[in-house]
Image (cartoon, rainbow, N blue to C red; front, side, top):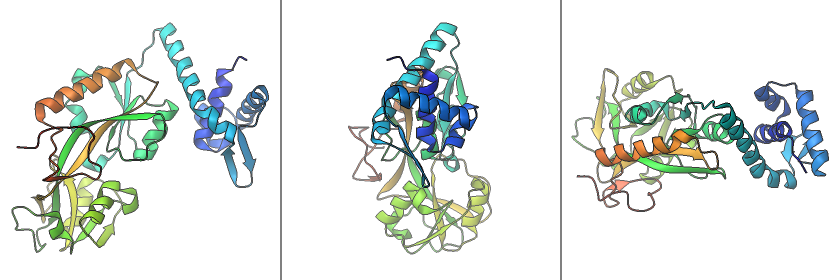
Length: 314
């Protein structure tokens, strides 16, 4: 049985979108052409891959089994074409968690990792979808489970987090704070808390009962809102350069110090030649700057790293 790559690609995109119109749009073909390709593939395989009904499109059991090897087949076909044409695209890297400035870290390794083409992912779900589609080669940001099957990640940096609060806050004059001292304050979040895993877990762990949400219009706007609340605070990685916002103070957190984990994320079986160089550059920088040091007796992570990332921060 010989598979038609165009038909398999049409299946994969539709399986990811679960919407014929959107899938057709990503392939720059008509919805009718997409439907014909999938119908021919189903005829060839002798089974239906999708359930079509009033409630939308869903994968059948056969479709779910076919999806992972279908993705591999499309990736292999793309790699074969690239090898013959000699056209090797730059390593396409997407980032998320923009309020915490992920580009600070990537900028320190980009010069040693070959040519990079940078994207602007919104969040972890949108980036994982882009990886599985093959639209990007790697991604950088905070990874938390569950991840879709077929993705792998490597911890790159553990960054201490500071509290930012109004200068009118009762604790603003403290040289350092324990996280539990903030339990009577209001945690300000740049979006719905259930979509912000790190802030959500921090609030649960340290008993923060009061929260407020905002629209993410950039760090300066967000911090101005925090500064406007006399009992408000939020969390920002210690190395993020803060804009000059009147009425705002940054205070280190201790006993324990929360750590924000940055990871490199990629799709297994779709290794771009530049991915190894990027991973090696990240590892070199982490060793030079002690990025992966973690002491469970004085640091806090929502998900402790596997293995021994370091002997503790000095």
